[in-house]
Image (tube, rainbow, N blue to C red; front, side):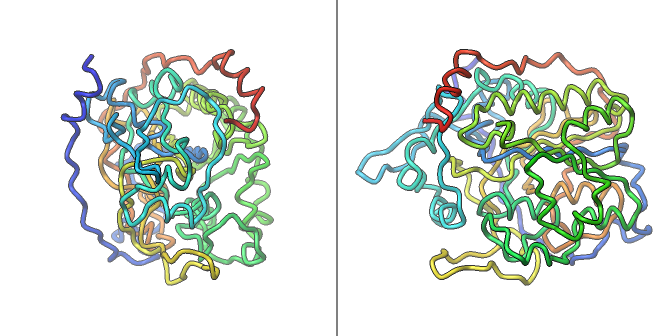
Length: 420
């Protein structure tokens, strides 16, 4: 195998895409047929979404060029660095610890780290830890998954801020002005349509498999009305076995159980949790006609070298900035995050360079079932068709690497619950 220093010369050249925000909220993917009409050209009957926490693309998948993709991925290179504020620089480095302390990923921090797209304030503001990355020795199952199925190296968080607003974009294609992890009364009063409201209106079955991280509770009226469609995350595997899986599933991991990969948790715990869900799906009766999307809500303040591109503003609601908040809007994506499309129809060992964000998952659902867009953001999002070949179904899956945890490194994490 080529040494990864040489791979820097073979990286693909990715052309910037022109931004088109012409499609309005409420528009249908196919205006020639009624809303709710399934697209027969997309042989996917079940869609599963797993969103983990706080990792950048470079942190997790930046090393794929030396683990199967041979220069096709826009990932980390040994010469990448950030100034340290004292005249020197800190280069990206392979992190030996599986658990590291949390770093700042607020609205202000993210905009500072970006620095107008220069991405050069990570070390100064978030310490050298922000430059760490992992590889296939740390995340063997994820690297096997990425090499077996389709990934995207232009998949961005929806907003340049932390978890709650990005989760809102996943469910509603907007964060309706929110830029931080707050639970203010306006959430309980929120009347904005979510993808779940649209699914209900068109009689498409869904279930939200939750833990204590019940993000759907932020939409209080929906949460109260659809309690019968909310279940424990452990029920997902039961529903697979009992052939009770709905058409759309959102599956949440637990922060308390350290499954969500949010620092300072041991990243291999989350990898094992995700592997259990994917292996359960692959061995179920649903596998032949299912697409599973694995991604992360935001980068957690960790380094990524790709500037955040422009994005369509979802609506006319401005960010609810406080006096000390940095100026900004929803007209740019957040940083890149890891993403894998897992399906018998996913292109084998493929990297897409098309720009996506969390609302692209909504657009995929909307395209399959011809559903009206929630906002301008999902109306104009790419539907991720580049990741699939619906003329070719590959049911057989090469045995993926084990997701077993390294006992010695796991012990270190137990002894250092706050990371390093």
